[in-house]
Length: 212
Image 1 (cartoon, rainbow, N blue to C red):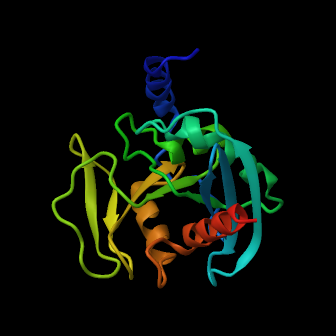
Image 2 (cartoon, rainbow, N blue to C red):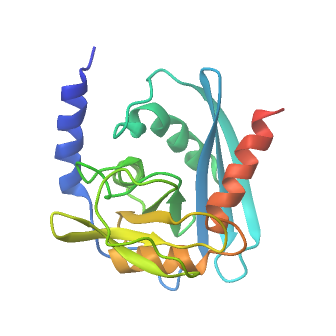
């Protein structure tokens, strides 16, 4: 059995593969959101691809997978990653960027689930989370679209961004996306909900599928 120490060492090694430069197609036209809903010992993963300009849905898929790893802070990939990979591989259209409901490099080893997904699939990813896992900030933003740097060891690794509704969200690049672009893309996708539309819609789809 793989130990927690071995898993953290794997993360420390894989973080060296993370690219923090914009390597996505420009102009980007399709952005996908990925989220999960948990039912007992199963994960229902949903992926929704939107037109970036209009934020209209152009494709959506769900899949179910048995969970075989317990929840451990900082090790979300090992619990939810396989289901995320599975649903992404079901998509017929190729999104330019994936937005994952998880952390990117705003992580103790700078390899959150969104970064791990990006490195594994060699695709551009952005992490968007509802709570802070790691990093410091000076204050919480209070005005819509206001952003405050999230810092680890003097490096800006992401942003605390105020949505139209609810508490701030935590945005960081996953892979093949710069810190600045992660903030811009996430902010551009904010509408009337707490999370950017790709995440909001994938969350809603996963929970709808969970009830079926």
